[in-house]
Length: 286
Image: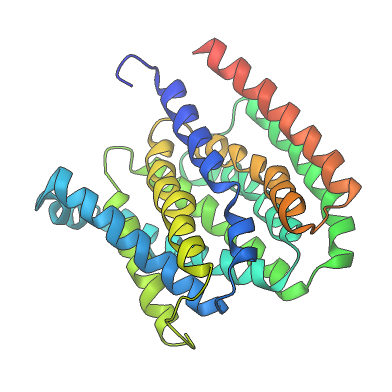
């Protein structure tokens, strides 16, 4: 990693994170545990996994990193917690494609927030990519609304806002390590869910699905995504999340036959091509 440019580091970290995230929606659908039980385990398992690893790496410096994160750490804890809760509840209350389409508005929101608070307007390539993918998302959204639920869609949009605010917060604190703040955020998610959970019991396939999901689709990606904005702008980080807009529903379609609409597939192809061209041009320049 030391031999890579910041652009290459950020792009690689985000791409790997999104690859791990893409089957997340499928695992949520496959689990039979109630919504708040799912939120609880998606908080508590990643908390212990990442907290344990960070104690091995940093030992007691973990708490120093947390205390020195300041207002950035506090903001990230709150936005990270809200984003995690909103995403799961959204998936459980609307079509998977609807949630992911709403989440796909995050790059546009990041670009706006980055321009206002960081004086970091997106370059021409990124701006064009955002506009193209935004219109692709709008194209998908108008059709997907017919088969979704308004409550779930709104929570999907809240997730997008949370991703954008979180990425901009990390970007504004490039010298700080906010992974400890994210760990605390996961603990808060679990504590909040514990007030509403109906049962802590995992049975049948949930004994396998839930831990795998919490480690592969939650713990690993959240560490990578928390680090990536230190190297590339927030809008670019969230551009990669658009891959989940098309790949996530395809996983669900292949395994449990929740078929995406032709509009979702068409818009998804546009999104993937745009991201591929954008990434190629940015990496070639770096």
